[in-house]
Length: 260
Image (cartoon, rainbow, N blue to C red):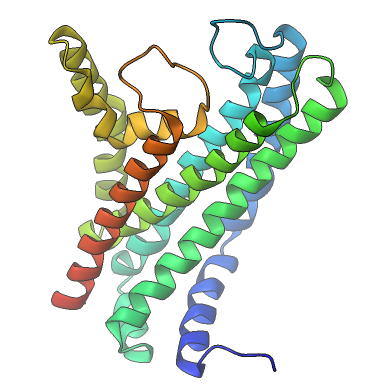
């Protein structure tokens, strides 16, 4: 017997999905991520080499394009999550959404689920493009094994996490610029400064608990093993998931407590 979703859950999820799929940029980001992964990997395969001892990334410089594709997909997930969530406040569409989905828990869950699913598609597009380049042009430079699979899996996880974080910040701050400014300001300015301070004070353990460090370590499986700014990949993935859950919990509380 096939189990279906309850009607109210299905209705909320369908509404959120249609809000995204009716936007041109949402469709355009998918091929862009795939193209970036493909072209960046073709370049890295052409000028790079295979895995070398004591060199980062552990999968070899020929695979750098894959990491570029994942980074672009994660950034696209962050931006799309923030835009989709905060855009409703900009155009005062959130009141209509709350009218048709009065259950705030359901409303929040539908938004997070759609953001996560779309972010997964973005990362998958980038990785498919990169994988095609690796198979066609880099077969003699790449080791196809568990480590590469772990990198691909880490890329999917990172994109989903940042998509959810972006959507959570959009709901919290109710503005696309504010949400993206908070996330990018932390990643580009504040956290690198913390790395410098931690390195100078020889307190590297402080840096490993931040989302930027966790993101890099989650994807760069087997790399930076001597760099104490990055935790081992399994631990880094847990740290990133904790940050995602914290952002989501804060946004959930705000959605439940604040007027739309």
